[in-house]
Image (tube, rainbow, N blue to C red; front, side):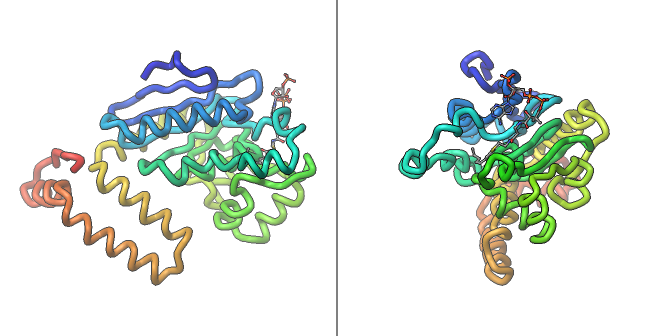
Length: 263
Ligand code: CO8
């Protein structure tokens, strides 16, 4: 888990089974330039492959989770460059290729692409004072990494429309009240402590079941209810083919702690 091989991020293993990526471009408040996104993707793929990792934490600094896409990089882009190079597409690797759950721990600014990056994660914890928002309208553009879709699904059309049309920020407390975030904590220290506690809890379970939980919950965002329920049942059935279903249920019957095999 060498942190030295990256320029814009740090990777660590704060607890057994927990991989952490810390965005580390402090001079630009973690603005998400292309090299940063490339490093993030590389680190996430490595954790996804690793037998030592069950759950991933993605965080920034106390001051900024990420202040958005890199405005200075985007400013001169032309339509044809953005279109032919599929600008932003690589961002969503996190939502397509990473099978392990990702917890976003958000303190400070999570604006534009930063807010979108947090919403791509599987669950968000934040500080009460975190500063979320989709301010793209102020730059003459719109959210480009899923913000208009994920924020609307999370908080409903009218609130999302208001935020995206005005560019106004919302606080971490509001994010938690509205369901964008799972929980908001009064301090940065509490945020990081509780994030790692939750990560540790998840890391204590079978990786097979953990991945399946992520898969079925995320399907609810794409499928109509009946198909979603059918999909869930298929995955549920398939887990009878896992070793850890036997391990877990046998341990319960014998009043023992399960020794997961992750198989
Ligand atoms: N891009 C590039 N540099 C940035 C960004 C950014 N998004 N945000 C901050 N910085 C830089 C500043 O330019 C400044 O650099 P320098 O010291 O060289 O002038 C440094 O970070 C510190 O910033 P400030 O001095 O502005 O710090 P403040 O504490 O005064 O203000 C704010 C903090 C309020 C966060 C302010 O920096 C700000 O408004 N930033 C821009 C926020 C924003 O508009 N974000 C949305 C960007 S657009 C976007 O994300 C579009 C997404 C569409 C697709 C997503 C996929 C890429």
